Image (cartoon, rainbow, N blue to C red):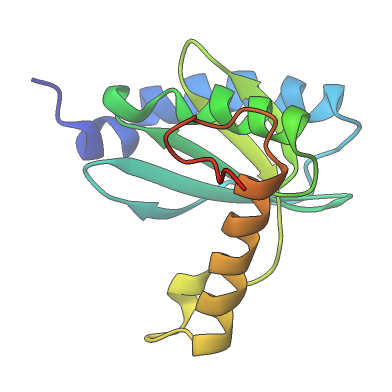
Length: 142
């Protein structure tokens, strides 16, 4: 069993990530202007950020069981534009996801304001209503 937090804190992993990230950002029309900062490491994922000439971007890698999130974000963005953080780059084989910054993460506050939770739930409901892929068990039949 791999110790993912140890892996994600390793120099080797970081070098692999940066070797992919810098060209991926360049391909998206962004130039790196600051250091890559590891914001969080948990057993299920790591999140990093880096400043670019077009604003901060967020970089995430999930545990293998959740690595599909990167490609899923790209698919959802294509199906229902504007309902997920804008995807800048994806490396599906590694599950690496880079998204544009949407402001302060909810974890910056000890307890996010209720209005933030309501807005997030509302956005999720919009995503469900606008999604062209709806489960028959969940769809409303009038």
